[in-house]
Length: 158
Length: 415
Image 1: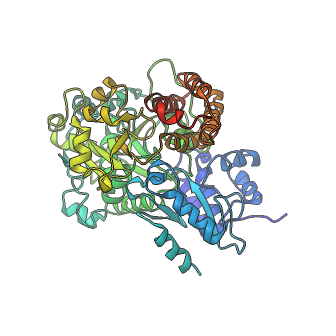
Image 2: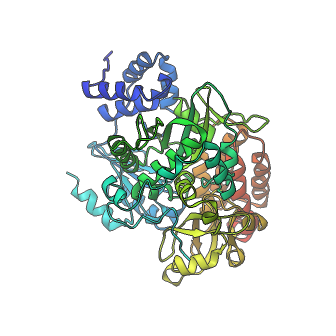
Image 3: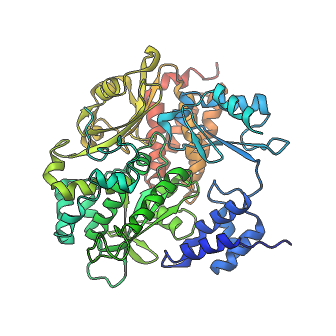
């Protein structure tokens, strides 16, 4: 089995943030974030690594990692497109954006394209209702979008 | 109609940078703050009638008074920035345009409850905004605004940004603390009497971002300057948001007591493309829906909204036009709640899924009157039988949609 360790930079970030809490338990979410920044997803090996670091059992880490939707528990495509599908965005045409991805890239929410380039998620309210419809592109908010602007963005992804 | 209390500096460009903020009067309440005692600050906030802006509307000052006196354990202020209620996008305006106001508010509020460390819990999706707040905090540390002293005053103040990772329920204060403690965001059982929150067994207070950002104004200008806005029972102002098919969606600060229809037409510019208004969900998706007719008489303050059987919530209005099918809207929202239920309590975990299934059946043309009765029956089981108010909120919105727009559901029934 492969093992996981933090890069030197992430180890420093970990030590720095650890000082800010009265109990190391609080480092669970920050640790999972650091792993995801490093590897783009959270592997079972990384969960064992976190468990050892925070004096927890691996199942306790797994329990937390599976609760929060933003942690990727398997590798995803290079470009992650998260279309907000909740009411305000739906009213303004979010379904058209999802349909566009299905028709042109061939992926439904939750799927990665065959070449590993795109991953589509239909997510719940991202708190950008005033700029509906919107999606996040690798975490960056793109508001007041349309099928045309999404098409342009997808075509521009090399 | 629009007023400027919290949003006063939103339009100054680059105001999130300390240099610009200082030039325009940021941190001006701090000098006065340190001439007061913590009790005086709390009293001022009590008299101002400031209420929690995160949706519950609980009075802020009395909440601070729940902090135990002379407790040897360290006290904590936890700022709730897990803004996830559909239709709500106000706290991010503060993160983006005036993070130093939030820091100033944290200093004032921490001083009142004798906390020396504050955590700002920001939803994971708000990476851009949490980075911006973090930059502002680092600037404040460097300039000696926070750290071992507060602008030269003998008060230690630490502020830490903590990122969530995608869970609506973490906006519930006890679930937020569980999450901050590194666990699943499961709301805690509530104590019988009123008491403060507990963070690793240390006393803590949880306040919404906007609430905290309002405190410097009250400290600096006195409670009377705040109560000059709004109504007698709902004093002050609030950041109201408007989304959906309107001409000018966005966040606007209003005093309490304005008419909803005036807000929609005068500030929001009215409906887009000349469409007819069908309904408004007033304060984030968890409030009972208002029909177009009810909107005509609705007034934006807590008491008036309760009087017409809804709530003000977070003030994030979702406007629905004539083109939107109410069954599809209900299905969209129940999918949200089904996905976001933490799964701890059976009525909520199973009830949301059950309603989701029934609405899918109705939309497929397979439903009947009996299904509507089942939905309303499940709503009864959702209300008041769970640890937190998530399930009662689901009941509020679904029940109101079914009861106020029955003809739309009936139109789908099996012929």
